[in-house]
Image (cartoon, rainbow, N blue to C red; front, side, top):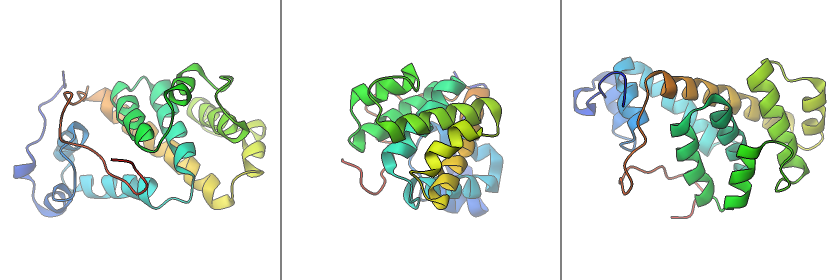
Length: 183
């Protein structure tokens, strides 16, 4: 159960009101409403990561789910496992994210993303051991997008856990829709 009451989007003003006009009715956004106009730049960065990144969608979702797993953020893991499935990721691959970088389901690049994500979450600065293998597979832009994604979802996970944001009930009409997703 959430630690504080959810914000009523009908009470939003300013930038928050404009943001709510575009957002699905997910509990994360209902909780973010207390931050006032900060909801708009918070969600704008999240949308940029999800919709305008050159980073492969599967690699991105592997990193996001892994951050959620390492952070103990059940809401984050739940939401992005659903998103990952809508991008066509198998349950075997999603399960492997929970197992760790050594899981057999990963290809070399996916495994490198897992090692890099673990390193950044645990140590802040990625070591050369995890950075160099990705440098061979990802462009400088994609490396930066991956790092920004990891950092953003570390923040999201900490927000979700601090306020005990509840997972929406099954059948909720609130859903995220992104380019390339299956309905």
